[in-house]
Image (cartoon, rainbow, N blue to C red; front, side, top):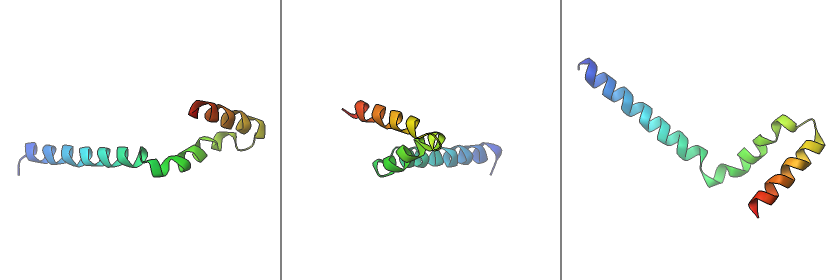
Length: 61
């Protein structure tokens, strides 16, 4: 095993991890979890949460 083979295997591992992560992030089953997570910065401000939810509803229409 030379350095080229090790680098090639490392690239393959990183590529597989990237594809797996992308599939996990863009999975429709995770959408509700990520939508809830987008509201975390506004957790202490109920008015801001209402505005963000209103904006997200208008974007869906």
